[in-house]
Length: 578
Image (cartoon, rainbow, N blue to C red; front, side, top):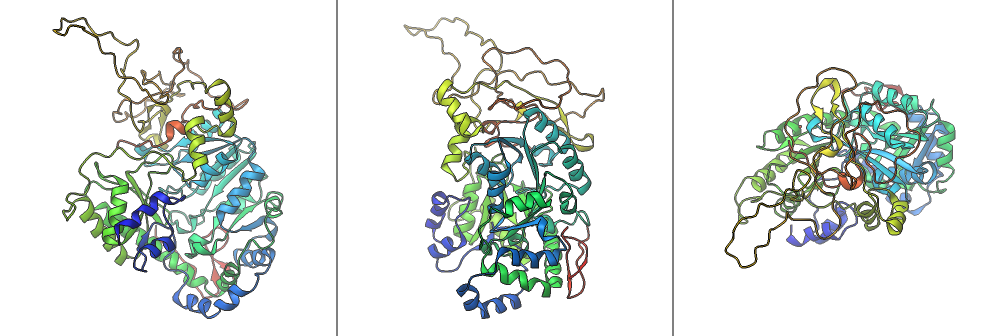
């Protein structure tokens, strides 16, 4: 592909240009797509032929009402229609959840799907971001996350299961336990957009449990599962009051005629759909094995239809992305614009083996081979600054530490308060590797300031110059940056059990007040009595400014539904009569 197509990444408001834009800028044929997480095996060729034959009628006439389409889908999934709201893609539903049900604050682990951070920020909410640690494979510890929510006083909690971009998976019993522990919150959202690709558990969904609880919404995607992102349809499941509140705000014809046609086709193609999920799971295992064989490339465990990989030391994701596109016609998702990630990470969609072999060959040439451009990436990468793709969100993040428009007004009036430093030893699930404390994550561009306070003065030495001037340590000069001070004392362990030693971490900057406070005494974090002030990191978590651009230093037999009239139940697994 021509080199100029890579300029589209810098001009788009999204993380990547659309396939239509890439096709227009090339010779009319798009690249092999490892970027957009679709199901490559569904719909079947026969289904596409049927839709093509009816194309004129589909695009000429209005669709039926959303209630009619929702009733048909609920018949397939065996869900009560009053507990379901269908939207023009899950993004539309996230937008309405934010407008209707998020009052002041929302907590979400990062990195994750960008709309869960950007959408509430755009409407002035405080977004409390809980960083997933690379040292623990980006696994989410729900106990630590719950503690973080209590310390921050957050009113809405979000979990993506599996998480995007890393594919991390939480078992159903743990999610239900978390939902019950957070029963006093305004809302708990479980985003299951990729759950039907999981095979770690037979029935992993919590949709049945959500319908029985007053403050839980489960979000599901159809475009991803069915390989039809362009149709834009998804749905949420909740108790009738919550679902009805969202449904009442949706436009009369928010679902298009293609969505209606596909939903009404599904009852005839349950077996093919089940087989497509089975094939994706097999391809995921094969693709993970092939990528893991590349020297220096780390592949993280995933239950989604994508793999999160860390490039070898010295590899810059934007360079790798651009060269794969221009030299090999392969489109990948570079994750430098995801909060909590960096340009050293790629998300690669699971595709058939023939495409994976092409990807592996391209990566071998770009990362290790020689070509007309020489070695792949000659120097240590520093990563790219965070960019959500939305200028307003970027401004809020950089100026308010995630406090939203209220924090921006506060900063304009009296200046942003410096947050107090906070850290806590956190042991991973099962007593594994300790998770680095909040203040212990490396910052994107560490400032070369002294490590001890007070700052030592240079010793006087005779010099031949006529005017000897001692040179102080370099200081930040442009925008205010957090000083790098000695890491504060950690909270003691709540129980007197030894924790495994963590690998040595590089020195990291910590936010601190102008006057250092003494180390905190042992304590148990009580239930929150009110929100933590904007910009102040809670124990075990970071503000948006701290999380932005951070980079770590360090990675079941599938079942289907037999029978042409079979269809997966609402959990996405098992068998139900169609």
